[in-house]
Image 1: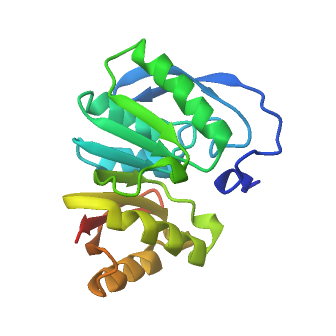
Image 2: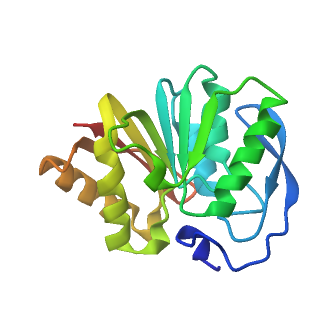
Amino acid sequence: MNDDHYFTARPASADERRVIDVVLAGTRLRLETAPGVFSPGHVDLGTQVLLRTVPDPSGRILDLGCGWGPIALTAALRAPGAEVTAVDVNERALDLLRRNVDRASAAAPVAAVTAVSPLDVPAEERFDVIWSNPPIRIGKDALHELLGTWLPRLAPGGAAWLVVQRNLGADSLARWLAAEGADTRGWGAAEKVASAKGFRVLKVNAA
């Protein structure tokens, strides 16, 4: 697998758009994807596990590492009165998500979705819900830096839900989250709340 979609603003692969059929939040959609983004041909298994586990969101929602949009779009469909912010370093992914929001809104009511680079999110903005299939393959140090940046941005009473493949370090990440939260890194308790198809779903509460 070419992993440049995790950290490359402008993927080197050809931008060959195509349309796939997916079902998100019970709604059948035809959405755009392209090479150079994560799981361009389908909703990946980890994301499926996450979306089957999380409760309906509300308030201000963050999709961390949005790709072409299955998590952000599911949140927008399940909570049309919410505000969804979707971030990714990959410009192609952000363009795809913006186009897919238009496609989804033609099929059903959806929340407002803002798809932006991480640097474009105001530093003071806080989120009630974070959903993420984080980019494990960027390496442990980079992953810890990523989560250490965004988890402290949970609003009081908020929670983050992360899905991680078990054989790619889900249990060690859960231990790190619990230990760092206990050391007042800016978030509270962390726990494993579900396990399916080789993936763990971790919940991290606001501090």
